[in-house]
Amino acid sequence: MNYWIRILPLVFSLILLSSGNKPETESLKKIRTENWKAGISEDDYEKFEYMIPMRDGVKLFTSVYVPIDRSEKYPILMNRTPYSVAPYGEGKKSPLHPCRLYVEEKFIFVYQDVRGSFMSEGKFINMRPQLNKYESKEDVDESTDTWDTVDWLIMNIHGNNGNVGIWGVSYPGFYAAVACINAHPAIKAISPQAPIADWFFDDFHHHGAFFLPHSFGFLAIFGQPRTTPTTNWGKRFKYNTPDGYQFYLEEIGPLSNVNKKYFKNKIDFWNKIVEHPNYDEFWQKRNLLPHLKDIKPAILVVGGWFDAEDLYGPLNIYQKIETSSPEAQNFLVMGPWRHGGWARGDGESLGNVKFSSYPPPSVFYREKIEFPFFIKTLKTGKNLKLAEATMYNTGEDKWRKFNHWPPARTERKKLFLQPDGEISEIKPGNEKAFREYISDPAKPVPFSQTISTRMTREYMTADQRFAARRPDVLVYQTEILEEDLTLAGKIAAYLFVSVSQTDSDWIVKLIDVYPNDTPNNEFTAANMQMGGYQQMVRSEVFRGRFRNSYEFPEPFIPGEITSVSFPLQDVLHTFKKGHRLMIQIQSSWFPVVDRNPQKYVDNIFKAGEDDFVSSTQRVYSFGEQASYIEINVLED
Image (tube, rainbow, N blue to C red; front, side, top):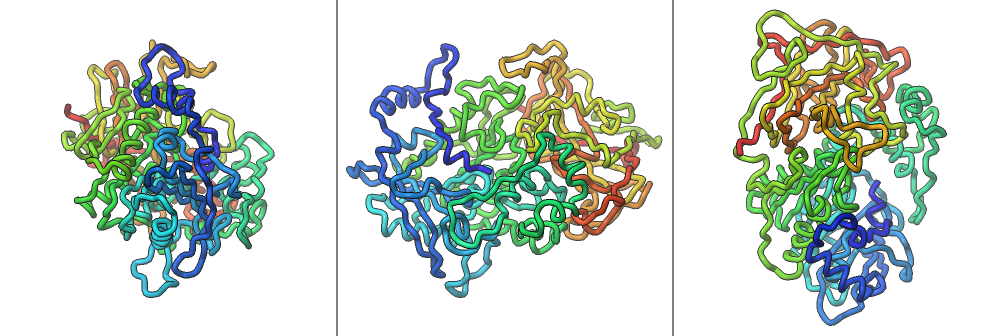
């Protein structure tokens, strides 16, 4: 999923800020005038390959790049990955880091295939569970592998200064987060970026709902069995159509067809997913959060507000460290990015939405936050002068700094969904009122207008007018705002609903509606108009069977009014004067989320064609059963 972070020729400094007459940052000037003139590149590093022994005798393949200039000692910057440290062979080199500042400054760069992946020995286990105690050398997990690797590097790589930093994005972000646990004393700084924290809420699942194209395409490649160390990724899956909606609806149909038609029981982790539809011990063991305590290294957690894969992870890892290790140097950065967007490009746009801050968001992050974080913790020893939380306001287009996240100066408010489709802070009266729609799993609501077999990354900011016009999507919105409204922190949906069947998903989308006279920008697609644009700001799906317990699901009683509540994750977004705030509610989001049959079955992964039925969905707005969205409004 993030192999690009190693192999793309990320020559950011040659393309950043290439348009217009804006002044370059000093560090960018330095790269242009000194680094590239001097020719500092991977050729100024010597590459070594090692099989580093772990405590149980398993050896892990590790590539080490050491500056040829031995006039000083250098810190180690390590990335552990299940996505290959290619190219293999001591004479073959790859880009050392997405940001060229690191190459100029000189580090000892270390890349390692984690246990059981590619050229490393051992058995690979997806999100290997952390152990609570270690009684023998055979008791290993990812934190012990990190410890053993760091210990070997410090003792055997000449010219290191005794300090180690660890970073990674997505799955490598998980391995970075694991390094926080029982950390080796040499590890001074760790940056988990888009880290997976709990796979029942990250990546594959969101509140028990299964994220279909993201999981299917990934597992079809990554889940293939490995019998011996290899440099081969395996065969990529062939969809034989560009249309994911058609493929998942017509070619696959119910998920019970996946093994029969495609995987043929050869993808072990898919079989594990099928056999564990609920939040049972299998998934609970893959929850990293309870193990994050007594954290010693400095931590820089990074995430994207529009990360469709791992938004839960960074927010919850940061928060867990805050509560479990209050003395830790624990920093959070959230920018206007899709998955990994801070590590490539400049971050000036996502889909049709432009972010006009200067320097561009990704440049600012790499130069002013991440690079100083590692320099000061690993090289200079100077005090970190970072804000506790550096957060990008995605509606105001500027960075904000906070001493706490969520901010202390917020006012909690309830936005009630009115029977006439309006949104108001006024609670509806006691006369029974509801709005309804028919949810048909044979014609699910698409998550995007784009024709693709993938989970299009820009869908998190995409225009939602296509969905608002469907009869199976409820739309609520405020009057035109007379002043700016800034939401900061947690958002939660509190719905009172009924269904005519026995199961249902609930998707809630928070949307910023632009004024009708909003002009297009240079990133606006040819078939798009920004006037009246309905930008998705936050969205989440909740599988209704888990409304009382993720471990023990239960059906709905047809026609009975039922409470369904769930968090939508944090935001920092200003709805500007002249805009509207909109809420959309629906029961399918296809194929980003698999279809709920809407007839309760014990295991949706084993549902058959006859289990998929239409259902009449009602959302209530009266008295004590008035549905609402709870928000935090920033006071300053």
